[in-house]
Length: 401
Image (tube, rainbow, N blue to C red):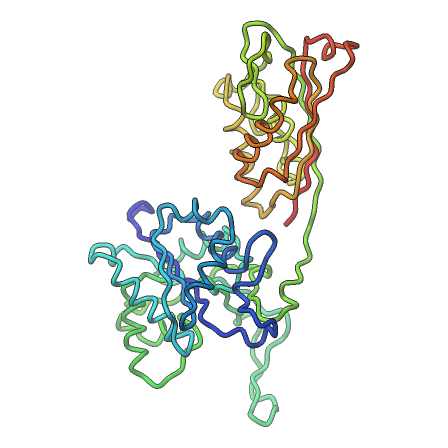
């Protein structure tokens, strides 16, 4: 079965009370950078795999607050364009909440879809999950039936008695601390949950439920893939005190101008008697921005990404080139804080176009306009730029993760 034939379902578990946070606000609804904890967790999956259904478990009468937290992120509407969103009232335990969400998912699927469905179960308060974890866990679940990301403990582990004495010395190399998403083939997991709900046993995660009912899973064991220390669950206020990495990038580009060429700047075609002479469309501003983003992220430079001797990049759209680079930069976990650009040109006059150029760059990168600024300078007719024979652009950017 190919990826295009699979039906991907994400269950975000967010029905808990968050009493240990001590904030008075559910931890999933707390702000995180320009988003919220819940929206950040959802975005990681929406950007990683082609979800068909997103089901969020919420407390009783909690849909309104959850919806507000989710859509406080300006990108959520476009990300959910082809996804069915459902808010499902949870139960008294995580187990019962997930079971209700699975039953909800079952009602949304056709019988054919159920046989193709893969369900990802993730903590709504675990916003730092990476694309690599999502893809590796999902691929392993498709192959083995069930998978979970996990970390090997750093400290030596012991099992203790009720009187706080050591009862067993455990071998650290055989232990792991599991994270989410926990990913399963949908039909067998639903059967396992249905059977587990009839017992008095309390389950703390879904891998245990999967293992307890091999008659539904063809005795397939849960595959463990490598987790990531950054993929932590928000439990206390201190967990949101994030130590960020920031990096500065510098980019520049220069092109001669000639009659008979179109003039492009910031993704816009601007009327001008001359245009850039270049292998691609010659948009010096987007080229400078692209180099700045690559430099800040440490991914290379525009020449290594798009070699000028490669004919497939001849007359290529610079908007496409920068979007290709920006996708890779974001996949490494970087986000844009701001960028400041300078364009040196004698013609055309850029002041009337500045706001449109800023808006164009913001749209290309899918960021807010106030993160971008563009200034124009002339060289007082003292060199090729000042004489209207060339154009040059500079960009400095600040990235963080």
